[in-house]
Amino acid sequence: MKHIFLVFIAVLQLFGGVVKSQIVGVNKEFSEASIKVEKIDVGVSGFVVHEISKGKKTILANAIVKSFDPSSKIAKIEVSEFTSLSSSALPNGKWSIKVGDEVVLAFGYTRGVLIAPSEEIYYRITKNSVLGWVHPDLFAVMLSYNGHPTPLRSDFLQMSNDNSVGLVFIFLQNRVYTLDAKSFKILTITDAALEQEEVKLPFYTRVEEINSPWWKWFDEGAKKLDEYEPHYYELIIEANRDNKELYEIVKKGGEKLKDLLEEFEIKG
Image (cartoon, rainbow, N blue to C red; front, side, top):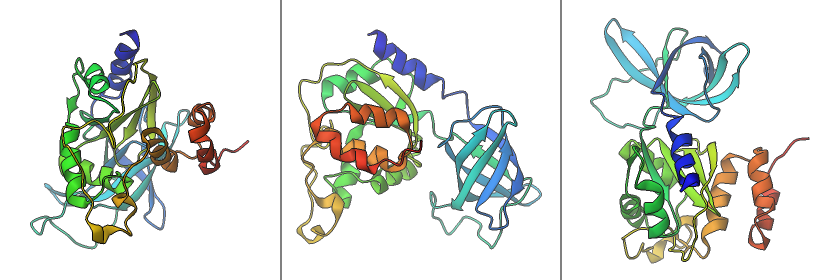
């Protein structure tokens, strides 16, 4: 149980509350902004709040931490079109981000979903946590609607947007990977020594079957998932190609993971 306790400690360290900071610089393409913040992890996502007029604000853009310099306390923020909400009632216009706009990060980090290979592992990890867990059944129902028995990154993003889920946890080979639900960047990797006696594909859920319509034969997510670990490692690697710790883990992961080493872009 010591390792499970460490999982919760690592997660709780991320819950210092929502991080808010004003933009202190913007590049000329309006694709990158700078903020000053005491500490933040690369990959943490959020959004930019723009003041239209006094007392009136709108969410203008998505924001993901691209880099952080501990010496200057400056974080570079990658900015992109905001897609989490779609409503004709929300204000819209041709506004651009500017110095003084507010960046809100780690929003939704009190809610997470755990991808686990079995019911036993799922409940061992979640039962003592103060995190607001979104049950994987909800994700499975969404996958059925999308016709995706194999979850894609786009499915995780949709789940995050639809259910205000900030974190995704994936159990793989006695480790729990904590990921930002939007960027899929690794926030922590924590040991969780739990015996894996069975594997339910694509993950533990009480939904009996996730169907795929025949007309979606061309859709990558419509394929039946054959193996648990290679698929989820591949999704994580896609967003973390330069992560050396992940590279070493995959390198020692056995024959079924060796082809995934080619997906990395490790420098030096």
